[in-house]
Amino acid sequence: MGSDPQKDSLAFDDEQPQHRRSLPTYYIARYPVTVAQFRAFVEESGYKLRNPDSLEGIDNHPVVWVTWYDALAYARWLDRRLKAIAAERLRQSGSEVERDFWEGLVEGRYSVTLPSEAEWEKAARGGLQISVHRYNPADPSTLNPQPDRVYPWGNDPDPSRANYDETGIGTTSAVGCFPGGASPYGVEEMSGNVWEWTRSVGKEYPYNPTDGRENLDAPRDAGRVLRGGSFLDYHWDVRCSLRFRDSPDFWRRYYGFRVVVSPFATAGK
Image (cartoon, rainbow, N blue to C red):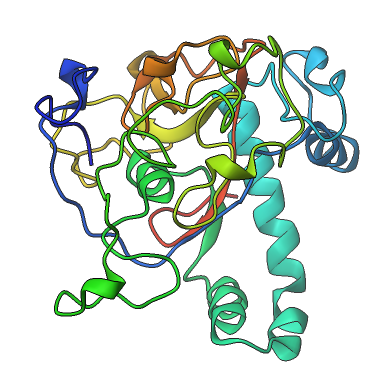
């Protein structure tokens, strides 16, 4: 996690020192939440938007103009929706992964929430293991060849793999348009398109999840971290380790989010 300036000349001070964190199993969405998904939440829940422009985008583009509180409200709504159907889905599950996912929701081991910085960055870089094998330090075939990669696809910027300034689109793009930019875990849109809210307060490294940075009730002036960069940003801002902090009350035309199903923190009531 973080950057080593000897390996990444673009590394900023708040990305240092590079260090290792061990995370329990969690599940992260392949794409950011779309306009259509967010609209379903608003229409069903009656949620009062801070900026109605968030519903004006194209259905299959990432939702934007959302605050951190809007994103968290969506995650809490989805948590309730998934837990309502979890028992039935568990009975229908085939694979070990499916069973763990739905069983964790039934038992309360997992909740839908926003990703922590650590969860987000691991999803972007791939961790020590590669996605199709269980990690074994004695077996090189299970190792991620670039666990500290600069971008989800490798160490060099490539505007054909993500929607950022040099790509030339100048606005959001439909999710799934850049499969060549997928991370080792198959997660897409981690670089570019929209900045993504995390649940983490912007504190210094090394990363310590027990120091209050994962507190969903932290004061508003603490700021929350966004990751990934957007269609407006240059290649140095769409790196896996880049951190940006803003007020949870702010919305912008390039702020979006994705969700995780995680044991780290419950999504609340």
